[in-house]
Image (cartoon, rainbow, N blue to C red; front, top):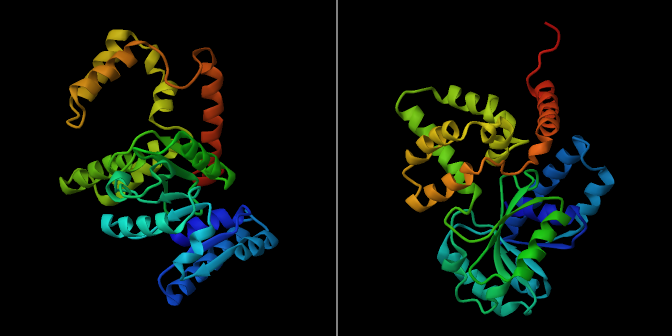
Length: 299
């Protein structure tokens, strides 16, 4: 993960330090950076000149004290509260007061490993997804003490390195997208274990149906585009209440809040007066994906 995250910053003009414990590990990271840059060039995302400039922006080091002059640090070590706590405390003592320290953790809570740092307002989570130099989305997660200024700086910085930041307003184990991803994984494993479908058909089914749509719509936008909000109120709530009440992970308070929101008969995201236009635009995007990934040409 570390080399890919470093590459994001380096490609967009930021001088970047990449630290690891040994020269051997840094050499492997350097090799991965070269492979990644070559792939970007081959796919015509960047030029050879831009690749060279990006590589030049990365400095490799085994010396943690080199981070004393950094403005923004991303920790990408093993998912261990003890190891992260140790590193965050070291960086807190090493860096000037303005330095923001972010963790790439996907499962741990900032409050569990960063509770002892003095700069509580300047720590947060920026969680990338594998492979981090390709997948555009990054969760920007507030910790209990993260200031609005720090949260906004990290959010804007992600945009400056050509990522798509997703704001997560408070911490929870697995943050936001990890939990959504795990819910799907859990159901996939259950379906396989109970003999409902083979692993091949489970994967194919996701990729060829809602996974096909997901590049252009999440669950909120899908609700809007499906037009469920325009259904008769009793029919709409009858169907959705059945779905909600069968979910053991939802509290009665959460179910009540969702029901009240859906009872309004309003979409989550789109302008109701632009429903037809929005639907047409999304469907044109689907057609381009269909042509690129699935269309077999003349029949």
